[in-house]
Length: 407
Image (cartoon, rainbow, N blue to C red):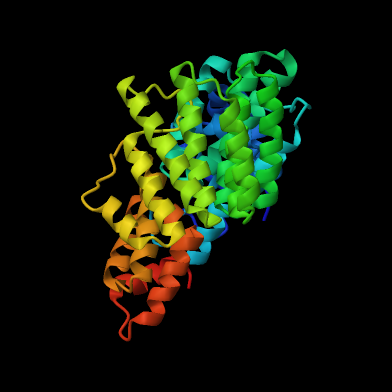
């Protein structure tokens, strides 16, 4: 299965992207000529794609989705809506965007020849804001459906104009590709995206972006178990950040939070809490400045508490994790993926304290907050495995979660 020929729509198993385009077009009351005009492509291209004779590229999918006023995930096939599908189908849908992201990243310094004229930078900037929200909500399928087109279109602008603004936006798109690929276990693809982000940062005219590339790199290294390298990377970046203005404080605070978790994973408690203290102090300063957050890093007192629980959990200091969590309610303004991650960390803590019912409740909370993230997160899956071995009579809620995780 390659490109965008994935997923199943209401029309049946294995339905092609072309058939989904035709269905969306007809629901909108458009002829092939009408859709072609609205999407700014030729009628013959629409006809070939609908007939399955030509592949639907990310840029075409994005243009058709805009013309038909639907989400791109509906065109490429999403795992929700209509009847319930099996866990294997959901897993397939979550991972299916990776080939198109890989292809979009492959252009690098080559301008893609798009069938649809690229949107202007003024149109792509708010699109990246929308994609950032999808990332924060851990909406992997919808993000994966729309991100490749944005990368390809921004690559055209960056390569052909060499404008710093184009490179800044492309760096942002690359960073989202790093995050998505990393979360879904595609480490090689995430590494390619990190390298692309570093090149874009060097041409973007924003001194903070290279430090954010270090942050992405450190997160990938943590996923790969290279905690010592991750700690070195973020410490070096934090030392170089200009903290004279609010944006720099956000970058610095985010790096310190990552350093705290990295040190905790290495068992270096004193260093971990020192980094966490610096992050907490920085978050308080930012809070006093009304929390300007141009990079969507969300360095705040609440996020510092979440990371404090993570540090305590990694260090095996369960009493501190429980104490920090007691009475703490994460702000709904925090990204869903961060709130869900906190529930997963606390589930781990309750498991180690043999508080199995509390552990189950927290991992179920994680799934409620960010379903796609929780079902694929290694720590959440391990917690569910352990819970499955504890109960003699497996609770219905746990049984359902095991099914959704494809155990």
